[in-house]
Amino acid sequence: MGNPGGAGLDLLLGVERGRGGVGRSLEAALRDAVRSGRLPAGTPLPGTRTLAADLGISRGTVVQAYTQLVAEGWLVGTPGSGTRVSAAPTVGGGDEPRRDAAGERPPDLVDLRPGRPDLTSFPRTAWVAAVRRALAAAGPEVWDYPPPLGLPAVREAIAEYVARARGVRADPRGVAVVGGGFAGGLALLARALRTLGVREVATEDPGLGRHRELLRAAGMATVPLPVDAGGADPGGLTAGTGAALLTPAHQHPMGVVLAPERRAAFAGWARRRGAYLIEDDYDGEFRYDQQPVGALQALAPERVVFAGSASKTLAPGMRLAWLVVPPDLREPLALAAEEAGTGAPVAEQLAFAELVGNGGYDRHIRRARLAHRRRRAELARRLPVPLHGVPAGLHALLPVGSAAHERRLVEAGASAGIRLHGLHTLGYWHDSPAGTPTGASGARPVERPAALVLGYAAPPPHAWRRALDALAKLVEVHGLTG
Image (tube, rainbow, N blue to C red; front, side, top):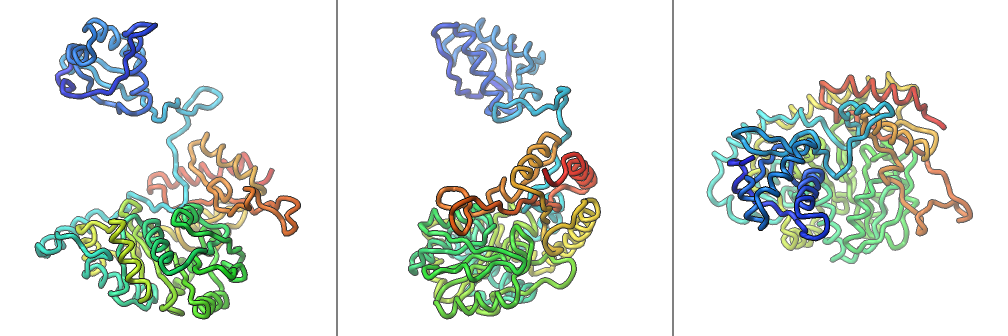
């Protein structure tokens, strides 16, 4: 079982020479490396002579180990091609694939987790053309270390776009282009705000737990802003609050729009207190029953940071985001960005500026908006109760009876091949200091609303019908209460 293709590969194998024999130890080390995914399917293994020399053991021991693992299905030996890792046993994480009671594997997973667009819809042709044009026009100076807040060309393109499409009052000098998506931008903002004395940030309840984690990692305390049909309630602001993180156009995850009187109340609070609002406009371009609501930033541009990204419009893998910041935050943000070294790569900035400038970005958003509108309507028709929230964005809420039932539905979905998340299973709700929500008296727990957060944009077109059918069957079998 020689292997010319893998002769030069180094393998980190912990082979012990104690009880049980070196052959058994080698078998176990190779089996574990394949099971864990450290040796992916198709990896060519070193020839028996090479591995024996590397490990200081006899070639016969290696031959015997390879032969045993081929018999078990972990490896495949092909005459003339050597020995490779088999595709069959590599399942990742060391766990066998989940099977049903009859021992059958579930169908391929359909992904209904929120926050993900259809990755097959990425405009490859338009992006490649934008890259070519941008690189052809770029002078050598752009390949130097870029400005910490982004290249002038992309800052200008984003300022024009957000002013036109989202009603933002934007000056290119106030636009910051950052890597790492909105999460990366929020981490930088937290560092900048801390230099200005902010120590407490209010965040929506429910809201993304990841955002609270990022703020706390920067040394901020977080306080909950209850969300109801009118969006986040400014009554939750405290005397120590120096900033508030909001999703006004389409609250995540509840799907409601911040009421006009609350928009005015938040803007007035920020002006009076010298505080800041962080407007996470994560999917503001996608409204299906009317024109999107304009940005809150226009009400108080000197106190509001407007944040957008390409994660929902193009793909999360772009890791490209932008912040429109008030003048007194620009220098602290630039310093935080320079210290962190997290700017977006130059080539991606140039290509994005070209895509925005030539209209390709707008054309892609219009196509995506039409596809999302159709999917949400089809989803609403297939389910037995109305979806919660306005027709917008990439997700909708399906209310269920309790947190326990929500968890059972998520688990049943995993067994049936459906990736799901819920308000409780994904940690959207703030916790009390003891980790359990309490009532006003603190005497007994309060049952918070439960729901599945359905990301209807994620499945590719060929899988959408199957995703709908699988979800409808899951709800039919397990119900929405219990």
